[in-house]
Image (cartoon, rainbow, N blue to C red; front, side, top):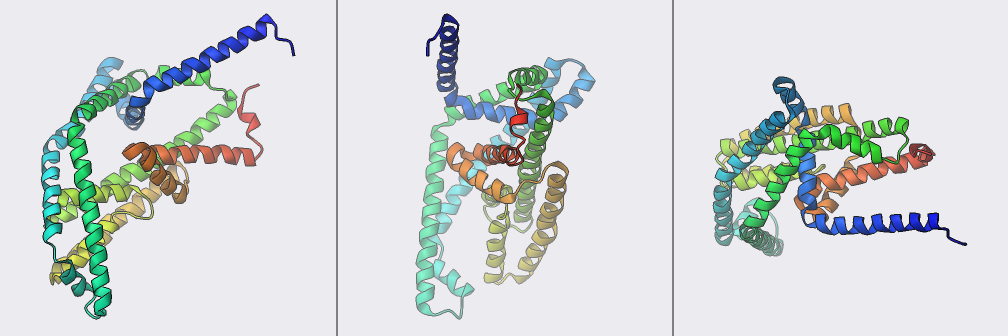
Length: 342
């Protein structure tokens, strides 16, 4: 096949764009997650920005006010909570070193044979040792990386501000370079928006509030190291099928095992009536209003995303899987070709 000047120029342009794309990826890769985090925050708080814009009538001012409020709501609590969290991590470490695991296991399984109690004691002791040592190592790494973390937070705030201010331009730019048929693009955008809203609001935001309610229970009933337990409860509340029960159930067992039956009954009632009901009612309402995403897809995406992208992967992973399933569904329905413009 002979190539004319036109084909050579076209291939040269494609090669140049490809090389520039690779270089852009290399440049952006170290801060890619921070950029995505800023975009996600901009998406979450865009309704607040739109309301603020209706009052102040100026994009820079509205975006600056919303950005400042959100940054303060995140930074100020962290400023006071991080030292407490560090202290509680060391307290948990000291507690695990002095904990009589065998006595606790015997209280739970008083009728079990001695070999079973001995083996379970060794297993629990090993798990506690690995978890506490891993947590301490992670905490040390975070403290060492404070300057880098501060830089990434600045990038998140920077992207967040311009995502709010230039949301119209971003939407126009994405629409202009989109390869999809414009009539089908609106349907696809609506589907993606439903998926994103369902995940972020129905899974992440509801999980965040549910974990905080579990944390409130820790404080009300005087549970030690409540802040650390609250953070763990929030993480598990976001993940489907697990929830904060993985934290408050052992705490309930501890109340009964230590002979504090009244506190155990009240604490159990609080979590069943308040924490679990909040999740079952509100999460179901939001998901049904937005989009029906399989919890299996969400869970697999969160776990895989957590390994690949870190904590932000709890959001990125399920979104990637959900978008991919949307395209697979279009392919199955033989509607994939109609998505693209001729």
